[in-house]
Every structure is written in structure tokens, then in C-alpha cells.
Image (cartoon, rainbow, N blue to C red; front, side):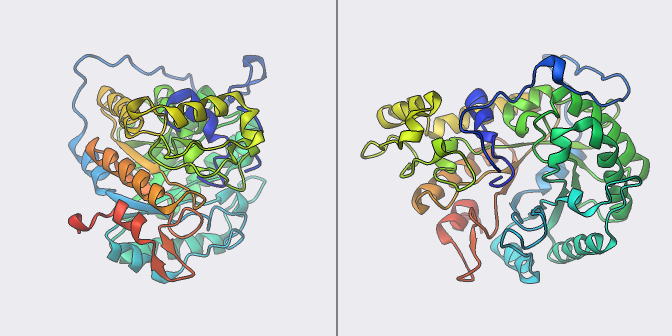
Length: 404
């Protein structure tokens, strides 16, 4: 999330959930006359759920459950180059993750930085070999692996110009890993947004799934909705007709003014620090001038400083309510859900981070969602790479001692 979801807070405000950043809440939906659609077959509308939908496929539910408790290997392969953001994936990480009690690693990858810009859009063989290495070492530790496509910024800015390249990269990825066990999952795109609006994304998704299934018929696909992949985006996600081996995913960083307070890549209106969780604080937080200038931020802090219980925007009740909505969608469609990202940045105090993380993890599991924490060893990290030790409050929040 941190470097790749700089506008995600805007979705949170509009949906109850959740890296140059605008200084005011942006309109993430462009005017209809400016949108560009991707040529494809006619988009099939989502069927209206019945009062008693068909039960989900038992094998698919088992594959979703098998993801269990996971962690993102973030800030590494989704950077411009691995190491550019201070994180290089090391072999020892996989044994550490397994021994701590995690089941899955999600591997964010910027494939677009390692593929030719002209047809046939060949992925660099050396980069493929690096991803092979990651998969090999994860599987050796009995970890599931989620391979995704992260930070394809050009696609978000100009879908029509990059649709063919996106599909071609996935054809290569699917062919490369077709023989891998089904503990490898393919997540087609992280947090679609920008000009890749819901209609455009669903059309491109249909093309891409068809291309992937032409070479790989057995791996489970993980799909996110447009508008940054929050809970509200599930309503607009269209699963291609005839495709049943899919899990839907969503991310949550709510409340953003807590989880991203003072983060270096967000706008100045998010700069107010000292936000604890849950609210209200023992002493009212004083807003920075830049925060007071933005109305939704000012109003959020007014409620945060004063309201108690479920009326506070930084309350456990808000998490429960949001996850209830996600579960309603899952039950109405029969599609299992995976919480692919959640985390609180290091600018928040560690005790609040641990309480929030434990609450999100607990609610996810109570709702039947497997999950993956953002992330292993950088600014949100559950592991301190410098000290070579786990941040114990965060690890305990994710893997309670009683569950070990």
C-alpha cells in the first residue's frame, strides 16, 4: 500500500473502508466523455443475486482458506528496481516467515518495468529468473505464493495504450508458471484506479482471464475491483462468464488518518500525527494548519476528538461494519474473499498499531477472510531488518501466542 495507494484515502472516505499525492480529496471517476474503454467482447452484466444463492464451490473455498495468515513482501520487487526502496528479498526471510506462523507470502511485482515496450512485450528473462527464485524459496518453506502485478502506472493513466501489453505480460506469466502447484496464486492487478475505471477494467479483465486460461487452466485467480480495490469496489467487479476458479480481494487502511498519519508520500493534510487507536484520545489532537484547511479531514478529527464508542471514526465498530458489507457481497455472489492488504505506518505509536492490527486481523478471521499484512520489513514492517528481530507487538497482533 504505502507507495502504491497514494489516493486510497479518498476511496475510504466514500466507502467506509479504504505516490505523489493531491492536496485535496480527488474525484477518482473521470467525466464520461473523457473515459477510454478497451476493445473487447460485450461486457456481461453481473447477475442480480438471488435471496438464496448457490453455495460456493467447496474446493474454491478450501483454496481461499488455505491462504490463511499472510504477509506482503512489499517495497522490493514492486519498486522501480529491486532495492530502490531499500528492500531486497533475502533467502532467510522465507524461513523466518514460515517459522513465525504465516501461511502465505504475497509478492508485489512491477512487471511493467521489466518488459519490452513494443510487441510482443517480452519479459526480461533475468527478471523472470528472479521471480522463479522467490517462488522456489517460498514453496520450499511450505508457503503459498501470490504473484501479482503492481504499479502498472501507465495502464492506469492510459488503458487503451497499454491493454495489449498488460494481456501479453500475463500470457507470459501464466505460461511460465503453469506447471507450478496450485499453492501459487495469480493476482491480476493491484488496486485498479485512475482512467482504468470499473467498466474499462471489467472489459480488460475479461480479455486477460481468457488469455490466461488459454495457457493455464488450473491456478486460482485473484481479482480486485476498480477504484483502488476497496470494499465498495466489489459491487462493480464483474467476474468473466464461465470463470469459477477465482477469489476476490480487497484492501483496508481505514481510518487512513490513523494508518498513514505523517507518511512521507501522502499529502500535507494527512500530516497530523499523534493519532492513537481507538479513539477518542486522552487529550484532543491538535491539527496542523494544512489539515484544518481540508474539510473532510477537519470534520474527521472533530468526531475523533469528541465522540465515544461506535460514534468515533476510529472505532472497532467501523471495522466490523465494513467487513459485514464485504461478507454480504461474498455470500450473495458465492465468491470467497481475501483481505490482501492492511497495515499501519511506523509514524503511529506501536501500541496503537498493534491494537488496530489485532482488531483487523480478528475481524477478518471472524468473517472467514484469509489475509495478508502489509508488510514484512519496511515502513509498515512486522519485522525489523536492522535489529534482525520481529516487532513483537505487531507479530503478536497477527499471530497470537495462544494460536501458535
